[in-house]
Image 1 (spheres, rainbow, N blue to C red):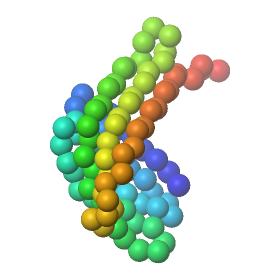
Image 2 (image 1 turned 180 degrees about the horizontal axis):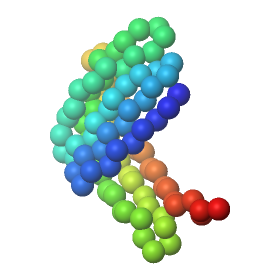
Image 3 (image 1 turned 180 degrees about the vertical axis):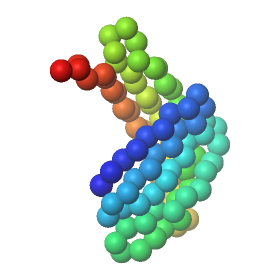
Amino acid sequence: VCNLITIHPHKVTIKRSGSITMRQQFLEGRQTESMYEHPYGSMHMETHTTDMTYHSMNELNQGKLFISYKVKLNGTNERKHELMISYSKEDAR
C-alpha cells in the first residue's frame, strides 16, 4: 500500500493505492464524499472534519498535522477518528 498526503492551508488530501484505494479529503467544518475500494467491494464514504491543526516544519526540522473527523461508510453510524502525523527532515548523507 502506498500513501500520499497533500497538505494545503485549509485542505488535506490522503490518497491510498494498492490493495485498498481511496482519496479522502479533509476540509475543516465541511463534509466530503469519496469511495473506499478494497478486494471485497466498494463503499461510499462520508467524512466530516471537525478540527484540523497544522504546524509546518520548524527550526528543528519537525512538523505536525492533527485532524479530528467523523466517518460514515455506506450510511452506517458515524464513527469518530483522530489522525496525528509527526514528520521530520532526514539528514542528507
